[in-house]
Length: 168
Image (cartoon, rainbow, N blue to C red; front, side):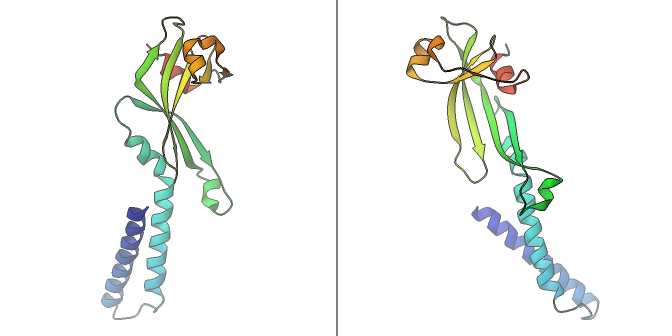
């Protein structure tokens, strides 16, 4: 957050500098309010750009073997541009390098799911995925011992979580 604040200040200073140069080149013909308006506009633009590109930057920074399974977008009234371009506020990523299979239940996979949310700490949530029934369950000691004892939740047919966990 501190780096984004510094970037917004730098954008404001850069815009103010450009207006200062333009004012010098025009012989002082620009109105006095043009510099603070340009600086404020640049700072707001930087903040909007940072918010709108958060998901792409986070996904690009994921290590090899971790793939984005789902992106959740939202539109809110105090950010009217999000009605045109919805803002991604959450990501769910699956670590495909650490997928494990249970010998007792070969159609069941144990996967590490990472939940990313803007301005929230990242959460690591182990999940059981049933590749045949297309379902997922939270990991508990009972579920690890016997996957049939897990509380299974059906997922959609095209779920990227199931596809990433069950691909061979």
